[in-house]
Length: 284
Image 1 (cartoon, one colour):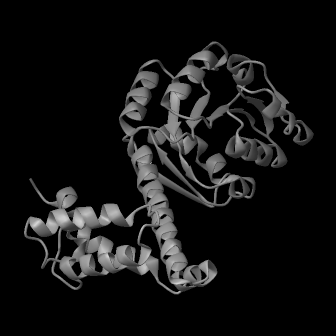
Image 2 (tube, one colour):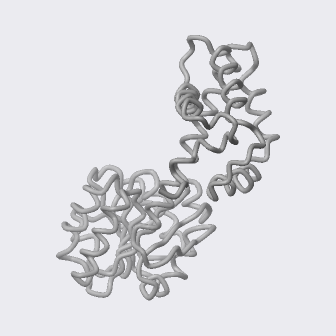
Image 3 (cartoon, helix red, strand yellow):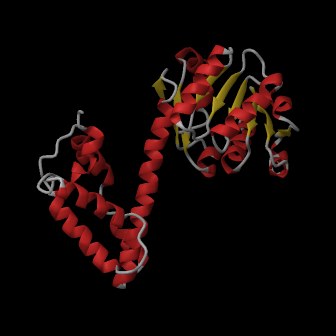
């Protein structure tokens, strides 16, 4: 049985704390809004009045907080109670540069810190599903690897560079948010065309998006724009989408069209549509 603390008990933090207590760990939690701790009492989670009180005696301190400013504030508040050998495990989604600066500063102060953002919702956290990314000192990671593995379905250690997990979390969230925006536009097209939204989404389930990422994503990353679907033709199709939507609001496609127009005006119309990534991947 481990003695651990969770600082931040929103939807995800509460799920982590509940799961840890169910696994038999001794769990203490703190949250800025104390009422959010009440629901954890039936699971044996002890409520603390302050971050410093919460971390006293903890082997691991898990942070699930809003942003960099709150992470810095809560770590500072917890410092008086933090044991010298405790490991601070930060699951917050944060800005990569600030994460690297924080890791360096805490390391210089003797605080053992790992950044471990996750791809999971509350249900996945309760059931040790989803994915967790880790970056930070390998020796620290090795000391808590087994315990972190109990929290997730997949555990990926990315290396000692402290901002890598923060960057990879943004990569993943960009894909999710971008996909949601495109799905919203597809539902708009369905509305404009008199198609049931369920039928539009059903079509998406027949497409192998993993294969698209593996194939087209690889050629884009390698700056290979040999055409299999020319940008000019893709732009024509996007115009068909815009015309179908008419005046209905769109989340993504109008911005895609504008970027395509820029590239076509710069002479890239005959390149593969993956040339949308050219400014990101070409060597300067």
